[in-house]
Length: 219
Image (cartoon, rainbow, N blue to C red; front, side, top):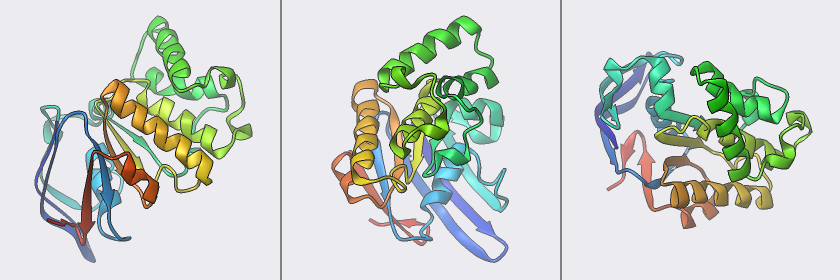
């Protein structure tokens, strides 16, 4: 499913990873742990294509997801393979209304209007957002906004979901709701999910936990 081999990432003033390799099988919920600066967010950026295209730096090595080689796959197609959920969803929202935000990704990928309507309905129901479909995103709670962000991420049926501190800005009850939702995506839909978090409650949901330190996996 995910094959990273001999990944080296560096910036002018620092090296983040050197000869890093990682294999993730299909249908895993993997938790990436480690101190600040250990390379966790950089690893997610390598997976979703933001590194080095939008962050700069020098990246080398082999990156494959579902038999797609990053070096031979354009950014538009790569974005259909890997979707991202961040700590602060408001920073990435482009629409004002819940339903419009969820549909936005499908518009950019050229889905037909009929396919968009059907898929949006499915995801609204799956994530218990139907009653919020016409609400302004600005009026939602933090937990509800994160559910909208997850809905937008999965509506195009990506192969991989990467989540970077998805509960970091939430209270305990909302964080638990988001963790349970991610767990459902893994268990019921078989999604492959890579999650970076400092939330100790997330460990109970993970199928595997890998520790990063200074750009290396602990053995």
